[in-house]
Length: 546
Image (cartoon, rainbow, N blue to C red; front, side, top):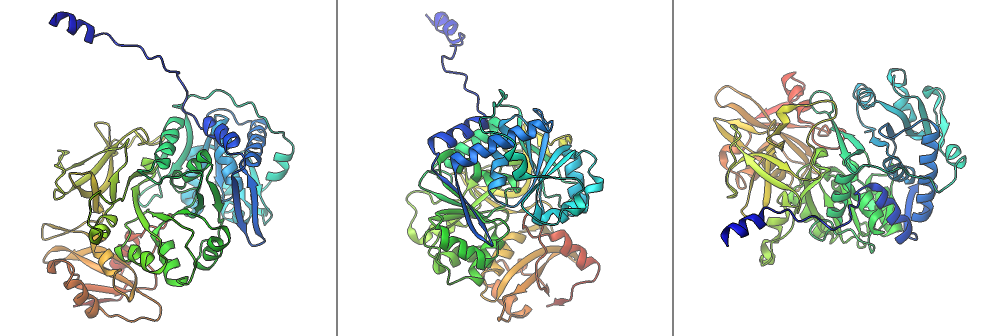
């Protein structure tokens, strides 16, 4: 009997399910048919332009046909140098569906980095917004791979050479493009990292990974995007595919609001008042601007805002609760994770008085993502909420390598090494304490720059704060606080030292303080600490020592 059971267990039962390809073509078809009447709103100085999903899909067909006429074939890269607008969404839909690769270009990169990214990605066509065409014109002569430039809108394009008008190339085509069969494991889109050290690295997302990540974004365990929503896409569409929100919104029939370049507090408040979105996503710097410069704005239509890109201060979450009555939910991920890997939530049974303690954590793992923390030797550490190690992840929407850049040091036994240092609770809640390159080692002990920054930004007189490690004769390294004082407020180093002394370990409190006008940012809005460290080394900062 036992031998019979063992023999039966060795038989593999064949699947009887359809081998349905997980491609963006399905997303395009579903949105244009099931949700044909959902709308895309694009905000501009002239007003708000609206188009239905059916109209946007027809225009995507025309774009695919026009690109094919220009010689774009499956596997070719097409760059987009665009704001968040309808044309960008049309590119999101058309380019992957025709088998080409959508390459979203970061408009805030330094010229030499932008030229590197376009050439490294080997973009044959670039679609550029006329309002930022001069940024691309600066490097046009260096773009050896680009054969055609298509311009959206009106503006100065004189530095680009010969160009094609977006509306003209669409008008020359008809809807109903015959999309070819696409392998679900083929690349659908590409994003490059922000390149804080060395050259930016390319991450190619497969159709399959986008399909599965989009499904995760619609899950109630994640953002819960659904047909009742109206999404305000503040996070740039060149920043890790706008965190997957354009595809998730299109798939579920959520209306989509595109703010273009109008991302300051006043125009954002107007956009929210006029379009009444229910859900949005933004980096902390944008939300800080809203909180401090548009406190009288009506944000009552929002059921929530997802915030990521860098650690979200407790004071920012509390401020939105108190001022707007809008919950800010922290999410964690990176370009390499498509990007959502974890999102903050509150465990069931939590005392309401303690909910904020969970909301300020980095997040809880999403279904589909596996995580471990490892010490310097690569040994996995326990999920006990205490052990600190490098966070490593794997899953169906986690990159396995960089495009044309193996970087074996970033991958270990099938795991992506994130470079983030943190701990994990037994229930899967992640708490990042720092980036590996930013953690401060003082006298052999770790100090979390992120925790210090979050505490400092809880002070009513502090607008922004960044903490960096600087050399110290006694302790090897000590924290230095770089503080931006809020407009109309005042604070000095002694005040802030005393404030911190009641909130962190005494030996964490910085002895060195500098007050600056603004914390330098990377191209995606993160604090650029390498600039602060360089300014300190060059003697460009006025430092107070206590």
